[in-house]
Image (cartoon, rainbow, N blue to C red; front, side, top):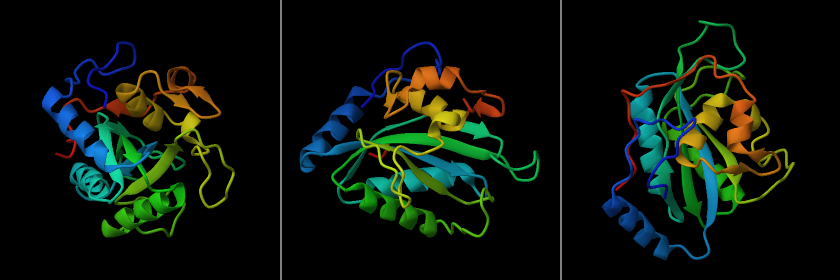
Amino acid sequence: MTASFAAGHSDPTVQPVPASVVQQVDAADATLHNPKRAVLSLGSNLGNRLETLQGAIDALEDTPGVRIKSVSPVYETQPWGVAADSQPSYFNAVVVLKTTLPPSSLLERAHAVEEAFNRVRDERWGPRTLDVDIVAYAEVVSDDPVLTLPHPRAHERAFVLAPWHDVEPEAQLPGRGPVAELLDAVTRNGVEPRKDLELQLPQ
């Protein structure tokens, strides 16, 4: 777990994770055999966005073989790929987890969590109650059309890179390089930190 946050792009208002919480999460890791690290991106622009993101985090933590290690700050983001003001803005966050699930099973769980929050898939880049994307899984690089790893557009998206960098300043996107450098290369227009909002690491 990231217990402190570096300077640079990291949000200086983010408080360190209490040592007691770190110990609890690390102890829970003992229940996982040879876990892999994965990074997931969460987004919501319908309904109670913050409550939905927290519910998704809690649901992922309740998944056998999954342990949430860190939760990013919240960002408010203009919708991607659509006309300005045509949809409500998104709340976005990133979670880093350890899992014994293979990528295909983690994807199935991500879709199940989306469906639990009434995600409707009838329009590309349409509004949604919840979007859960696997950004990266260990060092896997795959062009499988069902689950391309890492996410094929993650390196272009500040709403993924910025919160990820907040919790893992030294992170690398497999096949693409350091997240910090990728973040420097994209625009942050329309991607704003919401310092008044906070998501909780599951206890």
